[in-house]
Image 1 (cartoon, rainbow, N blue to C red):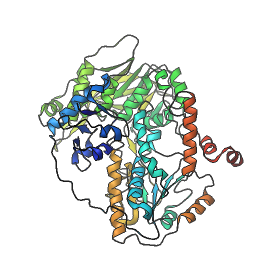
Image 2: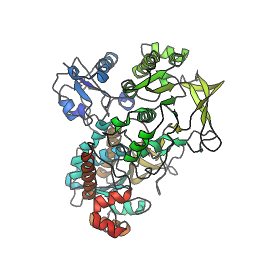
Image 3: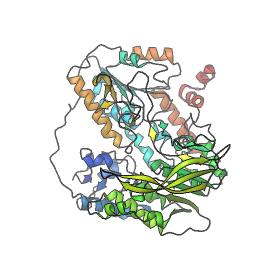
Amino acid sequence: MAYVITQPCCNDATCIAVCPVDCIRPTPDDPLFTTAEMLYIDPGSCIDCGACADACPVEAIFPEDALTEPNARYQTINAEYFERYPLEFEEPSTPNRPAVVPARDVPWRVAIVGSGPAACYAAQDLVTQGGQSVEVEMFDRLPTPWGLVRAGVSPDHPGTKGVTDIFRATVANPSFQFHLNVEIGKHLTHEELMAHHHAVVYAVGASSDRRLGVPGEELPGSHAATDFVAWYNGHPDYAGLQFDLTGERAVIVGNGNVALDVARILVSDPDNLAGTDIADHALAALRRSHIREVVVIGRRGPAQAAYTNPELIALGHLKGVDVLVDPADAELDQYSRVRVEDPDADPQMVLKATVAQEFSQGTPSPGNRRIVLRYLASPIAVLGEERAEGLEIVHNALVESADGTLRAQPTDKTETITTNLVLRSIGYRGTPVPGIPFDDARGTIPNEKGRVIDPRTGEPVTGVYTAGWIKRGPSGVIGTNRKCAQDTVAQIHDDLTTGHLTRTVKGRQDLRDLIRERQPDVVNTQGWAAIDEAERRLGKQSGRPRAKFTDISSMLDAALGAEAGAARR
C-alpha cells in the first residue's frame, strides 16, 4: 500500500526531507519544482512508513486505502507523474552554503520585513542554522502575522492554514522576536533598520491587484477579487467594505486559483462556512446573498487556464453546486489539441483539458447553485450608468506566435453578461517599499537570487535582500516560498562569510527602545500569542477553529490588555 499526496499539498517539501526511500518528487533542486502544482509519491517505491504524512504541515497525505471519494483521483494522478518522469536516484549535491552562520561573540542581526510564508521560511533558516550567532527581528504593519496565509487562504481550506504550525519553533526561539503593528516607512525608516541590522530582508508580498483597463471598471459593483478575499478573511483594512450580493449572478474575470476560491465561497452553503474562520460580517452577508450563479471568465482555453488542477477538481465535489462548461468551450482549438495530444505534452495541461471536458458532459440539477467556467473570452467594458449592470466580453481565438506560444486574439463576436457584481481576478501586484529600488513594470524589487540590485549601477545594495512574491512576482503556492527563501538566505550566508556585512550595528535593546518611542502599541511575540489564544478561545465557543478580530483596536486590546487599551483610547 502506498501513500498518496492530495489537493491541499503546499509544496513545502518537508515530506521529501523525511522520506527514507526518496520517492517524492519533484525535489526543490529539480527545475520542475518551480512550476509543479503539487508533489507526488511514487507508488512503486513507497514503503508505507507514513513518515511523509506525519511531517506534512497541511494534512495532504493519506494511505491509498483511506482516500475519500473527492481524493480518489489522486491515486492515479500520483502514479501518472512517475509514468512521465520515472523515479531516478542521484547523489545529493553538496550544499553551496555553510551549514551554520559564522559564529561570533556579538550576534549577527537580521531584520525581516513582512511575516508571510517567505518571511517565516527565511527566519526559520536563519534561526535554525544560526543558533545563538543570529538575532532575527520580524516586522509587520498589522498586529497579526502570517500574511496571505491568514488573509488570503480560503476559510474552507483549513488544512492549508496549518502550515503556520511549522513556524512555532522559530517563533519560540529566543533568537527571534516579532515587532507587529510596526510599519516600515512610517514608524521606522529603511535607514534605521540598516543602523540596527547587518542584513534586511524585504518579504512584503504583493498586496495590490492588477487592473483590467476597460471602461466602467471604476463603477460601484466592480471590485478587485483580492479585496473580496481580504474582506471574507477579516483583514482589518477591508472589513468595512460592502459588496452587492442582491443579484443572482456574479462574474469573475480571470481563472486562477483566487478566482476559483471566490466562486466557491459565493456559492457555498453558509452553514458549511459557519464552521470555518470566515469573518462574521462576511458570513452574515453570505447568508443574505441572492447569488445563484458565478461565471468565471478566462481569456484562453481550458488547457491554458491559470488555476491548478487540484483546485479545479475540488469544484466537482461541492455539495449542492453544479460546475458547468459549454461543450463548445471544452472543445479544444487546433493549437491546443496538437499540444494536448502530443505524447510529450505537459500533463498538467492535459489534465486541465480533461477535467473541463468532463464538466461539459454534466447537466444542471434543479435547485443547485452553479459555477460556469467560460473560456476564450475577455472583458471589454463594465456596463452601467451609476453602478455595474453588466459585463461586455469579446470572444477570442488562440493564435500561435512566432516563438510557439499561444496568445488570445479578439474576434468580432461580442456578448453581454447581465450582472451587478464584477470581480477582477487577474493577479496580485507588488507595491514600492520606501527607500528600496522597485521595478514598476514587474511589480517587484529588482534582485539577483535575492540580493537587491541598484538599477542605476547594476550592483547589489549591500545588506539588502528580498524574498517571496515581491522578489519573483505572484507565482507558485505556499511551499514554493520555502525554496525562494532558502535561496535568499544562502546569499546572506555568502555575504557573511566573505566579510561583506561586518559593519557595526546597534543591538536589540536599542531597537526596542526606538520602536517603543515611535510606536507604543507595538505587538511583540507575547502579544501575538495573546491575540492567537483569544481568537481560538472565542472560536471554540461557536465550534470554529478561531473567531478573528477584524479591527486593530480589538487586536490591541487582546495583545496589550484591556487596561492598556482603555488608556490608549
